[in-house]
Length: 123
Image 1 (cartoon, rainbow, N blue to C red):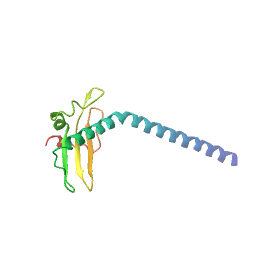
Image 2: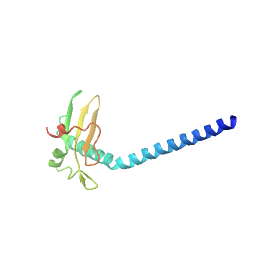
Image 3: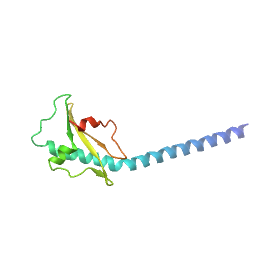
Image 4: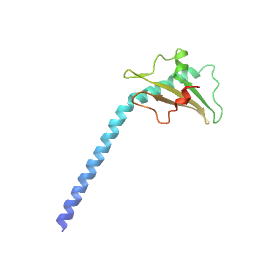
């Protein structure tokens, strides 16, 4: 009886370790796949910050201003929005809640930022 319980607990221990290893591997694979898109979002925020550095009416408490990729392109600050030769589109939400916040949203063939809203591109 004791021998059987010991064997079952060892099996469950191995299953737990394998499950943990599998989930960790999936997490690293996902992070690796999305890194290039996250970098593109950071680049869009960086370009938007330089765009808003001069002559920009920053939002007031709770207000939100949308800066589209097209707007940045027309200003000559960015040429394209691509990841691995797939064209993307995007925008940056500029808001103020005691501090100015920038949040980039992009949509590519194989990736879309969570809460991306295509209506914000057509303003």
